[in-house]
Amino acid sequence: MQSVLQVAAVIAERARGAGRFIVALAGPPGAGKSMLSHLLAEALGDAAILQGDGFHYDNAVLDVIGRRHRKGAPDTFDVAGLESVLRRIRAGEEVVVPVFDRPLDLARAGAARISQSARFVIVEGNYLTLDAAPWNALRPLFDLTILIDVPRDELERRLTRRWLDLGWSAERAKHWVASNDMPNVDLVKAKGGSADIVWRPQEI
Image (cartoon, rainbow, N blue to C red):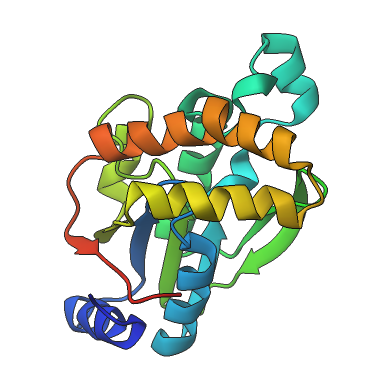
């Protein structure tokens, strides 16, 4: 198992001599991407975070296209919008980006800023290394890819706890995890693609 400091050291070594360095931190739902991205950013220092969940389609859009029951699946994200933002980051621009608010279940526009001075940009999301269009178009925009590997039963436990902590009933949480979250977990595990680093984190 690799610690945050060990992974940060690998990133720093790979980035030696480079300017802006973009890291994809991918992994299934419940893998701890948000927490790990913040810990990595802290360990690296000059770093900013781009949250993939900020590109969720709004519930109103999902209702129109009939996909709200599968929110979080690969086709429920604005991947073209994410690609556009990544290209601006790659070009060295300052970019104001959305952030997903889980308790409100929506993305807040303009909620975070990635400054021109940020050397490292950590992009965290479920499908960043997915071997399928349109997600695979993002791959050339990353300097380093990391795929977080957590056992399936642990992911199921964490995801159930996530919804219970948000006040859901046990029945509702169990149904959502089984019908939506775990199919997304299984997709990432089956087709998550290759990565430069497979990270099996210490307990977080």
